[in-house]
Structure formats: C-alpha cells, structure tokens
Figure 1: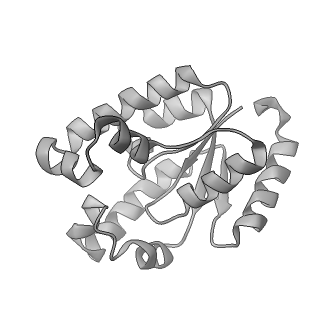
Figure 2: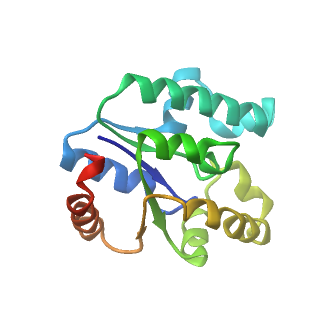
Figure 3: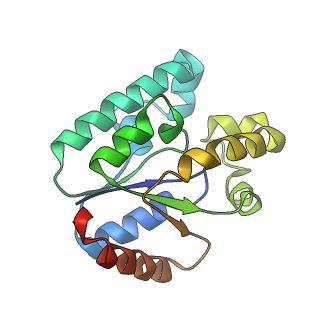
Length: 169
C-alpha cells in the first residue's frame, strides 16, 4: 500500500509519516528531504537559484520515480506539491491520500521561525492567503485527519479508517 501525506506547512506530515511508517513497517520518505539529499542542495537554495517552477518540476519527476520504485511506502510531500498542475490527480491514482489538517494559526506557530521554508519569508498575510487557496485542493484527499492531536491517537484514527476502506490495501 502506498500512502501519501499532504497538508500545509507545519501540519506534522514528517512527524506523522515517520511514526506511521514504523508502525506499518513501510519505508518513509519526505520528498523535500529526499530531493535535498539526492541533489545535495537545500530547498531554499533551489528556489533562490532556479525558481519555484524549476523546483516543482523536479519535485514531480522525483515523485514519479519513487512511485514506480516502491510497492509499500509512506510518502510526505511538500505543501505545494498537490496544488501544482495535475499532481493531486497523480497522488490519488496510486496512493491513499491523507490530508493532515491543522488550523492556520497552529500551523503558522510551528513554521514562523523556520528559515528552511522559502515561502515563510513572505509573511503571515501571504501564508494565510496561500493556506486558504490550498485548502480546497487538500480537501480532495481520500481522507482528512485533524492532526492537532498526539501522534499515537492520530495513528489509531488512521488505522480505523484503513480498516473500513479495505479496497485501498
């Protein structure tokens, strides 16, 4: 089974992804970290040097490579990935897509001082608009989970949902 975690910056995709992958004994990949390691460059540097469009194309290319490579996988994608071109369609085609929902203020609290997130530099007002713009796209996921709870509870909720949706296994 392939599981993709989506959501706004600071929603806990990586934290939840690591815990879930351990529980399921699946590999876990954070797509941003994977790209940074593979190309030996940080995401903010990619944005600075080559621009967001270049990054989004690179992100899609690596997603497609990972999709082919793994039978079972927990994949965390960056907040913008599902919103670029037809990426949400691609995610839903081959992955069980989980939207980790966190209210904006909580998300902003987690990311406001994170220098590794290029879009944070644009300020709270910009991020709030981006959050609102992305929300309808995120809601297209197979399931939405309120991620503002302890990880163990989140995993229990997820497993309950999976049990009821056997067709994805």
